Length: 181
Length: 189
Image (tube, rainbow over all chains, first blue to last red; front, side):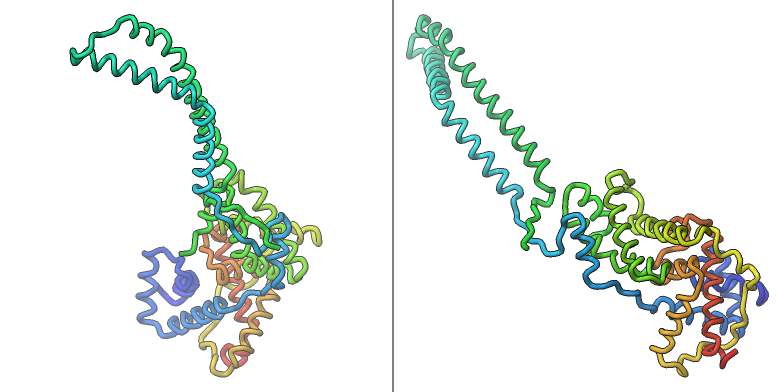
């Protein structure tokens, strides 16, 4: 490589944009050519000067002005309303539904307990299986049980919908922005 | 650790109002500088900076998240600069710059910059003035490369010009700057 060929590549060499194979060739020439080494130093100095050139600074209020344009003020405080609030609301809803459906759940519990006692007695042989009362419980139980199960399904559906709404409405970082001004 | 631009964009799209605020604070200075270097007009630079963020805000929901944010942002700003320049004069930005073809590919630069003879501040002011007197495509190329640290390929993407044209713009810009600083470069040569 002669000086003219090296000179056309020195700029890209300084910029780090020369292909690796050509870098080696240029470096070999630089090793043996003081004139091209001076040219390289000049180019490096120019690049260093340009990199050090400071930005033109805008007015300090420009950022606030831009943010205010779509209602996001620079001074905002964040209020955490994420998982804690969601779980508290869910728990409250669950308690309210359980209280409201208490009688039906109690009936379901009584029916289940009676059936269990009858089965245990029969299996242990200490209690003769009262077929009449068992059949009666079986006839009455499902009506109460279906009512209670319906309430439970309704609770789960409501809770699921509420949870989905919380996920959609509350930002993923769990913060709602509140303007402090 | 500072979140990347792309992470902030994703957070913004998931409803985090703070994320876009962070992007605005991060890039207001850079966009203003780029616009000012192009327009040499502070009011126009502020308008372009604001308009760039507005367009980004509107375009983000439809944008491709796998692309780097910074070059995309600068591309919007450069296009706004071009639009503003086109209103003042009909010649498009991409068409500028070729009239300097008479310049040789190299300028003799045997002597090092005699920094020791120049106060640093004075040299900086001279360089700033010399950059301001370059043609708009060269000013923008210098800004994107040395102030914003974009690669040649990113510059080609931002400016929507071939890679070779990026090389040419930067080379010629630096040649012009060396000419402008000639009195400090090799004893007035």
